[in-house]
Structure formats: C-alpha cells, structure tokens
Amino acid sequence: MAETNRTEVHVYEQVVILSSCVLSFFGSLLIICTFARWPDLRTTARKLLVYLSVTDLLSALSYFYGVLRSFNSDSGDCIAQGAISTFANTSSFFWTVAIAIYLYVFIVKSSQRQANNLVLYFHLISWGVPFGITVAALSLHKIGYDASEVSVGWCWVNLQAEDHVLWMLLTAKIWEFIAYVTLPVLYILIKIHINRAHAALSEYRPILTSSPVSHSPSSMADRKLTIIPIIFIVLRMWSTIRFLLLLTDSPAGHNPVLVTLHGIGNTFQGAANCIMFVLLTPSIRSRLVAQLCCRGHDKHWHSQSVSQNRASPYTPSHREENTSPQTWENNEG
Image (cartoon, rainbow, N blue to C red; front, side, top):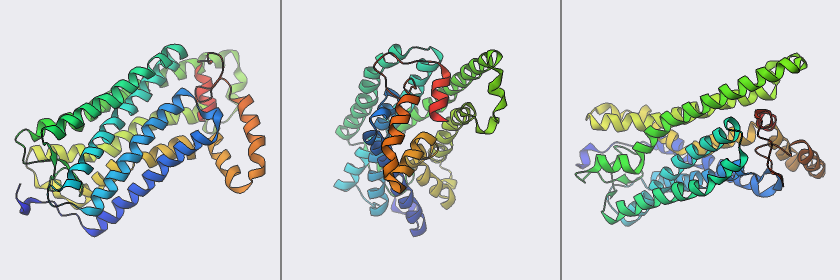
C-alpha cells in the first residue's frame, strides 16, 4: 500500500488511546490482584475472568507500544507487536465467550460440575486456537505494517498480502462476528432464566417485593447481564466498521473520530471489565475500600464474606456449589 494512503494518527488521538491502554492495563491488573489477594474469590468464574484479564493486559501492553511507535514500515518490532496483539486479542474473544458459556451452564443448566468440566476445553480452545492462528500468520508472513487502515498506529495484517482479507477474518474478525451473535443470545437466556426463577420465588416469599427494585441484588445482576454484551459490542463495533469500510474502499475509514473510537474500543476492554466486576461489585469494592482506608477492618470483612457468600458462583466451596440464580445475584449485586 502506498504511503499516501496511510491513515493519519494525530497526537491527540495517540494521547487518548495511550490513556485507554493504561486504564485497561491497570484495570486488568486490579482484577488479577483482587483474585490473588482474597482466597474466597478464587472461584471458577473468577478464574475465567482472570484468564480474560491476562489477555486484556497483554493486549493493552502491545497496543500501547504500537500506538507509541506509530509504525510506518515492516520492522521487526512491528511484526512482534502485531503477533502479540493478534494472539491476545483473539484469545480475549474466546475467553469472553467462554465466560458466557460457563455462566449459562452454571445458572440455566444448574450444573456446577458440568460447567467446571468445560474449563479444560476452554483452555485448549482459548489459548490453542489463537496461538495456532498467530504462528501460521507469522510463518506465512501475513503480519506486518497496515498503514493504520485497520488499526491505529499498531501493526496487524500486512495489507500487501493478496489474501489480507482472509487473514483479517482468521486473526480477529470472524471470531468477533461470532461473539456479536453468541454473547447477546447467551446472556438473554440467562436473564430470562433468572427472572423466571425470581418470579417463582417471589410467589412463596412476598417479602422480597418490599425491597426497592433499584437497590436489590437481583436488579443489579440483571442490569449487569444486560450491559455485558452491550459493552462488548459498543467497544468492538468501531473496529468492525473500519474493516467493512476498508472492504468498500471508503475514505470514511480515515475519519479522525472513527479512528479514535476504534483505538479506544480495542484497548479499553480490561478497564470495562474492572468497572463491571470490581468497582461495581459491592462485595469487592467494599474490600478495596477497607484495604485502602481502614486496613484493620479487612479481616473482619473477610470472615463475614466467607460465611455470607459460601455458595455463590463467584465464591468457592469444598462441596458442589448451589447453582440457584439467587447466589449469583447476591454476589454480583
């Protein structure tokens, strides 16, 4: 591709996207640290979230380097950065869908054992497939400089390759499209199941209705199940739009606003997960506040949380966990 076709990445765009990378890095790191700090958080669901956070952290680092360098040729570090971000980004798609599948089996199928049996397959697929694709792309010299036509300064698929569209699909887009469909379907099914179970329970426990809906754990969990696929789509859609514009040779793909949104969407996933599953989860947020502001209360909070959340899908147990929707609501609300 001629240099004149290169999408200009302005300094203000770099600053915004680099800031997004930093937030995503520390957001992912906070998820990992909270998991390591409090043993009672080490459930299968949280482990899957940690694996996702590892990929988001790796993505944030590789994108940060790419945006900072703003490559203009097929240099060695361009190819290395492109390979790392390709692996991490693709793996992130797989782990995002894996978490949705796990929650579906855990909540809708009410089987903790069956859900846990899927974890090995999640590892094989979510690490193995992206690794195989990345190795193949590297071996065939498909990763390289793309003139920021489908990136924002970083390297991805070399547009000089005749089959670059195929490799864009294999290294990201086809998995992105699958996630667009899979995530909303799974989370809608989970929401329906939780709402039905909550309605059935309310018939026998009318006192539940005395609590304000806006403050109930089930209300917060319900909102999260709505927001999770929406956040994923809102963040990733800008990259998809630029990909489609590239296929049609549209100059709209060079629009600075679209380029900036693409950069934020590709780099902010770790921060978004941190907001959803740490900062907006009262049980974890309270622990962080206690840890930072009043360390003396941390042990007291830990002993209370163990007794209150023993059966939650985000809290481990030495026996098979209670798989009712209410346990997930109570912990995530």
